[in-house]
Length: 284
Ligand code: GLU
Ligand code: ZN
Image (cartoon, rainbow, N blue to C red; front, side, top):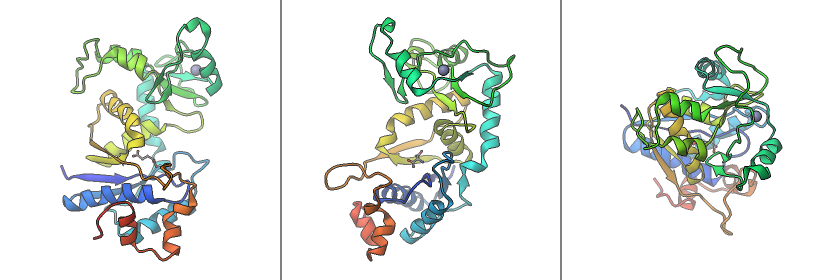
């Protein structure tokens, strides 16, 4: 299979040096291997995504010398795909509706009768299971006005993940670790069919991505993605987590840190080679 990498920014602000580093690494890897480099616009959060930012992303990447080998995939064009997978998971009884608000979850997770401190997994606070007994598929109709959670215990049982970590597929993960260490993650949000985790896994599979190059800040999320690939029967790409680009005070660059936006450096007369040097890559 052709080595395929991707860059998957969210059009919610300007690209900064950290994005440039990630995109250049993924692009250089594909070019050095004679492979493919793809672009994906992660505009799942339609309240924060803007077409102007998407246009600016294209412009900044081209200026950096980055070219992509297919029409960029836009998540907002893929709702039918996410819906179809959710329908399938619903029919299996693997997802259930959840109407909890963040503060309900916090309160339930730290309730005195639970005895222990709230537990955090790769997706934040482990969901305490408040809504797990709500009506679910295939008998109940799929609701479209609330979040949908993956019932990790049910999935572990149905797929035969056991306590020794032997699984029917190749990744070894113990059922207890899934249930207590990851919990019932959200696969669909109230206002959008899909979640970051579901869409990224389906998009990488559908785009034929073989190598994911992403920041070390997504290391925990990667655990969830590998797990979802197991559950959905999708291939697992090779993951490379790169170091994060920090400012002089050691703080990670945030998207609204306009001072470090690629566009700002461009306006100040920097060249693409200067940007490469700033993130520690050799000039080409
Ligand atoms: N779109 C996300 C971001 O901008 C994630 C990219 C990924 O999944 O690697 O950080
Ligand atoms: Zn709930």
